[in-house]
Length: 138
Ligand code: MN
Image 1 (cartoon, rainbow, N blue to C red):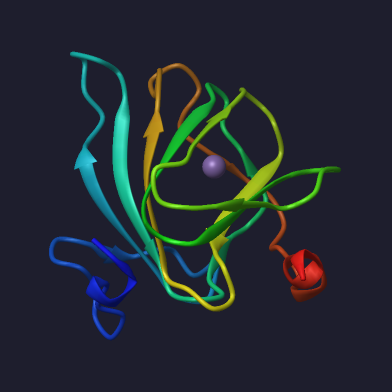
Image 2 (cartoon, helix red, strand yellow; image 1 turned 90 degrees about the horizontal axis):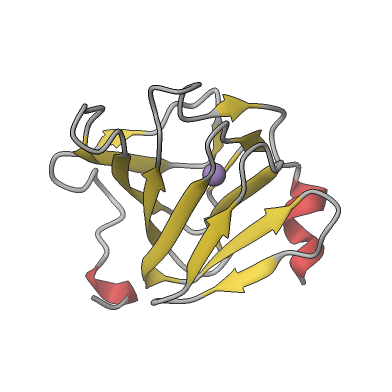
């Protein structure tokens, strides 16, 4: 899949718009693996419009991101924004404050893997990422 394959005018099939309370801009979330006893991992596909990102947050049990389309950003609190491209993976330790989202000029799609979902939940939301923080990449 390349950037032009991503349809941005409507939700990807089977996806729902990401909660507006925790996202800046428009993103869609498609649950691929719901909470389950077999692996206790929740897996989702997240599509961001250019400029869209989630709020600062933590994962009580960590998270793995795998980029499948477009170009995006990942930032841990106190560190520089990292550019993410197709095929990149990010291994996020438990309780690390961070955010992720699209680059300003590209849509972005990643798979999000949240392990041990039953042991403390998948995510703890914090404050939005401001434009000043987001555009600090440039
Ligand atoms: Mn995360």
